[in-house]
Length: 109
Image (tube, helix red, strand yellow):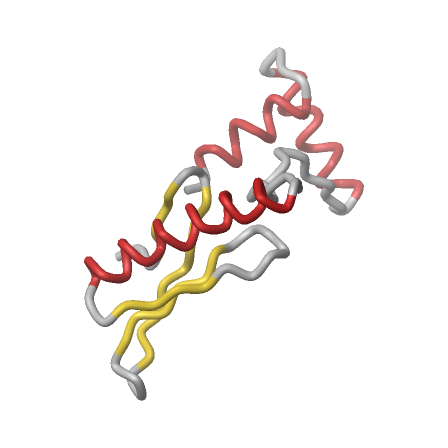
């Protein structure tokens, strides 16, 4: 079971708050804080969409670009041996290291 929702490219993590007996969500991958809640899944989904839509409208009204969840760039630090092994595998498959890593990461979900 996944505890996430996605709308317009934004993903939120969903948790249940037993004290208040509601579902609480928080948008992931951006520094701006977007949260929402709902007592049922349908209200949670509605409030999530409304929160994202409000965020986008608010950004436009303020003349600022909304943050995007991820740029597509990853900086990794790995042991030299891991780097060498990955580069050799990529080269053996006729791919750049970047192509190979992107394919491996895409299969990791």
